Image (cartoon, one colour):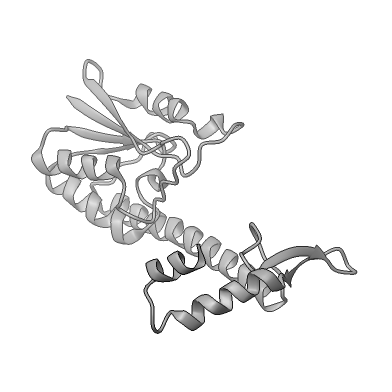
Length: 204
């Protein structure tokens, strides 16, 4: 019996050993069938963000291909959210596995089955919970950035045309840099008549 262990990290950073690639593999190895073989497919690349909300992941696409062609007997993950943080992705993936009699092994849920009524219901609820958490975090960050913007503040590096200064309350505010602002206004003024390349040549 051949098992694929799928691992993913959204960010690689120091101090995150509890969800490192190695820790994810170690958590599922004791659950694999005795005498079988296994391989690891990873979507954890240093410096790259591998969101579970999208299927645009090389490892994830490789996993789907292996399931479709029938070259895997089981799939193991540390937790369901490593596979996908979207019900739109996780439920069809599980259906494809179940239709080919490929069991899903989850490290943090060692005694769970997902090929019966209770298991399917539980997987669906967990998929929705993972999606809710991801959506809520995204909406919260969007709202925070919007509030900062509407208050004249900013996150990240200073955009061209502005510099950061602290107000009387110590808050970071954006202040216009006149010389750079002239360039921005010129770019927008020229755009209806010239291409980006032409504008860049003129400015250079």
